[in-house]
Length: 301
Length: 301
Image (cartoon, rainbow over all chains, first blue to last red; front, side, top):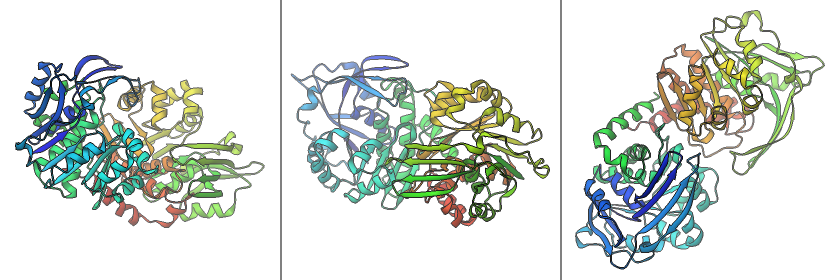
């Protein structure tokens, strides 16, 4: 099944304790699409500026991502982000952010993308997510990401969105902020009671928590020794998850659980190098090999 | 196989967002021994003061803990701790602490306890842990717990201890403090390189990480909705772990992994009520039922 994703494509400058990467390809959409591409056909709906380098286009070709919905907009500039991770890489500072084309309208959905059955609304203003959601009335699965900014400034729109999507993905501090609960299971229950069928709370190095109407699942992160750049960990997690679901086209709790494990594994590769460098080196075989080790690690009976 | 534990027995006053418990039974030794008692014979080596209430003795009897090494010392007073958990129960403040008998010498090891093959040195000064460790030269498994205080004030003694024990249990902030590493897998590797065969890093609501010479294992915590009092979570985790190992008398990586899962499950019950109230209500059957659900939750392939 085809999966469409909308979100940011950026030119990132990233500093971590392991080094620095200048003007590399980044953005939520990019990490998500690359991660999902191991499992299904991925369609991109996003805009970049006329400054977007050809070398970055080649990355989308590498992952066989369908870029018919990628607009290189004349007179606009690409979203740029500069960030620095601290010694404890759970902490980061944004040094510079230039929204540029992200502040403008999304490109229209290309006609051949209209039959997309799996839809991922990467983090953006919930009113924009709602607009896009309504263009896919027959989608089998619609999942959105969000962030603290929208919880604080567009709370009503976010809550309206929750009533018309199937799943929400967000991180632990955002889940606490959205619900006012400090216990994550309670926070997840409160989110599901707002309307979405399930919620996935991302906890970074501590793994994830799924609350689904059929049950609750906590998984650890893959224990990673070599973390070079955490950028895109959450997006590649979501990409692996949605890609696996679109690929198997099954939404039972067991498949959703397996999709979380695949998301975990793809994210564990992604953080081993800057930008998409590590993902470019691996194949589905590498993912499946690490997945088998992860499943074995989790076998306790 | 018999398991001996030494550590603190306390009279605790605990305030959490869920309520308050006055002068209840607590202490590392107490939680550990109760948790381990579901799996093996547990021997206690500890001192209390003459103020120790008979009602608390009854708790040890409830769990069939061998108290021949429990000295009710005349002229001494029992260790007392008063603590308050904040709205986010990962945070707590110590409001009052009276070491009392904890500042005095341990009772001698009773002759019938000398054949203990499993030894747990709960958190105390590493010089005291070393002294006790040397009294069990034929033990099959010796594991110690520690804390930030000893890492800061008795670092040399702690490092000497690490060379003569099999495993160390400590929490994530302590592992970072001991090694200066922020990546937990790297911190665990550094601890194993100091001499112990394995290390278990406790991450509270985020589960645990084991680094063993044969491999690395990360497990989530059991996703708990009802947390009434986190006191003793780490000690009951360690008790479930050591109790399971002493019960099966197998130290392969699979058994150690299973012991972590059992520790996780016992701890998940413990936090559902103040003091040992919840553990007093459950049997091994309840533990095994929750363990089966946990194993099922973790089945991703």
